[in-house]
Image (tube, rainbow, N blue to C red; front, side, top):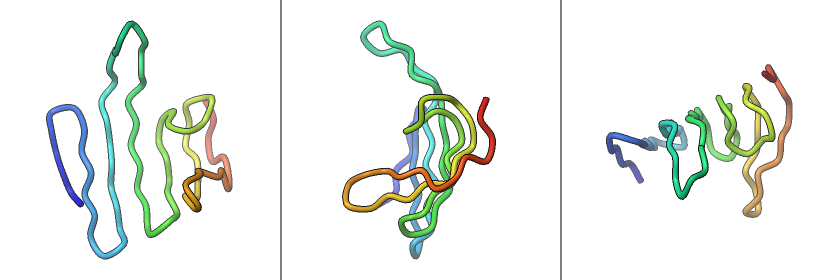
Length: 75
């Protein structure tokens, strides 16, 4: 499924996926911007999506959970 708004978006094609969201403040909490590039269940995450610190991470999404495979850069 693909969608694009002024704040976020996702595009899928044949198992390849690109997703992103801008930084936002919601109910007094700040959420950082992020982006992912993926193929099937594997992703390269840019920002602070599922990890405690911003950086670049290789992850795998399986059984409803995100597992970190490797930390490429942590800021």
